[in-house]
Length: 128
Image (cartoon, rainbow, N blue to C red; front, side):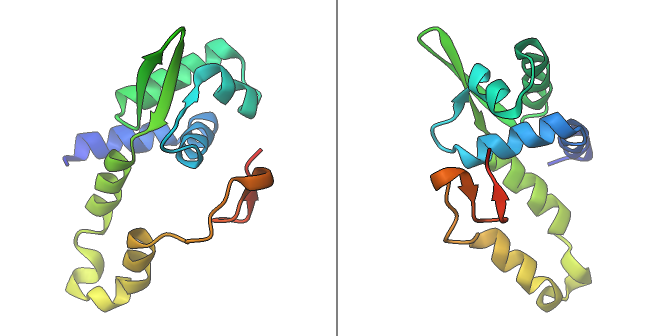
């Protein structure tokens, strides 16, 4: 992955609504969500959400597919994984033991994550 793609990803995620959109889509993997549902969950006007989804899509962070009359959006977890790998590739100047907790978390995210009852137990936040 080159610097330009990394910068595109971080530029896209550096805006609050786009970051929230990506996080919502991660919660709903692998099913994804229609744009209207994302807009409803985040209380964002539909046309504004469409613009934000376009930015995320051009940055490679989301993908879309048509399902009947809706467009379903999904988080591109492979792209995010590549981005994170790029950042930690030279972790701690070759002293991997210093980065062990980070690498372990990236390889094995919390097993008790849940969307039930509107909770996201991975980070203690309410998913709504």
